[in-house]
Length: 106
Ligand code: SF4
Ligand code: SF4
Image (cartoon, rainbow, N blue to C red):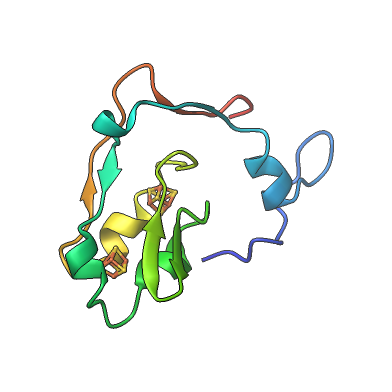
């Protein structure tokens, strides 16, 4: 996984830091009833590694006071958490159109 401070490929305007690039994204957030990713708290409570907290580039997963806190609103739809979670907690689907992330600059 690339370092969050690393630079992306040079463009005509020069390299852009990944954090700044993430800041160019736009989101159309669906309601919680239609969250495109859900986790099962009972499974996360017993998880031995919390790999999701390491792989998510948008920091959607955090361990706070031992509890896994997940928010789908900032998701960039990379799919890494679905691959990293080997505990069967993550249910991952694409957002309903027209919801989700918008890559304004490609
Ligand atoms: S890796 Fe899976 S089970 Fe473990 S904390 Fe993350 S979502 Fe929960
Ligand atoms: S799909 Fe990617 S950005 Fe979205 S929550 Fe999973 S790891 Fe984070």
